[in-house]
Length: 214
Ligand code: DX5
Ligand code: ZN
Image 1 (cartoon, rainbow, N blue to C red):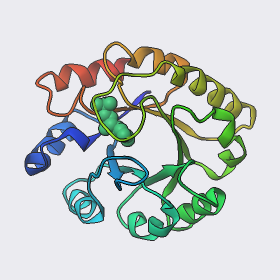
Image 2: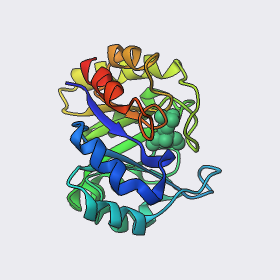
Image 3: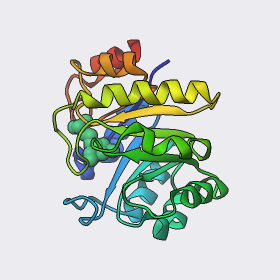
C-alpha cells in the first residue's frame, strides 16, 4: 500500500499541532520534515529545535529530508528525533559513511537525488539505504511543478533495487498532486510526499483518501 508523507513546509507553524492531529486521524503514515540551510538550497526553513517539538507532539514517524551542505556534520543531532534520516547525494562527501552512521544511530537511512542527478549515481550506495528519495522539483521551495523526468528515475531505481533483492522504499517529493501522483506510483514510488496539495487544504481528507487508493 502507498504511504503518505505530508510535508509540513507550507504549514502555518503556529497551528501545526492541530494540523498534525488532523492528519494523524486521517491515517497518514509519517511526516516529511524539510530542513534547508540557505546554502545547499537558496531557502532557510527550520532546524532541530522545531523537530524536537514536533516529535513531542506526535507518534508518527518523522521523515527528515536534509537539504544542507556537508550533512555529515549534523547527523548525530538530527538522529535524535528523526525516524528516517536522509540527505542529498550532491551535498555530502563520504556518502556511504554517512549512511552507515545514520543506521548506527538507530534511524532508517535515506539518500536523495536532485532532478539533474541520474539514478545510476546512487546504485553503489543502495546497500546502505533503507529509502531513496527522488526529487521531482528542484529542492528549496514548495508549490513547484512536478518534473516528469523523475518518473524514469523511479523506474530505473525500482528495477535495480529488485535486481539486487534489497528492501528499500522509493519516495518521490515535489509537485505531487491529483494530476501527478498516479504516474509516480506507476513508475515505482512507494511513498508520496505532498506539501501544498495536502497541508492546509480544506480538501485534505478526500485527497489523503485519493492518494491512499493509488
Ligand atoms: C522541496 C521540499 C518538498 C516540498 C514539497 O524542497 O523538499 O518537500 O515541501 O512541496 P510541494 O508538495 O508543494 O511541492
Ligand atoms: Zn522534502
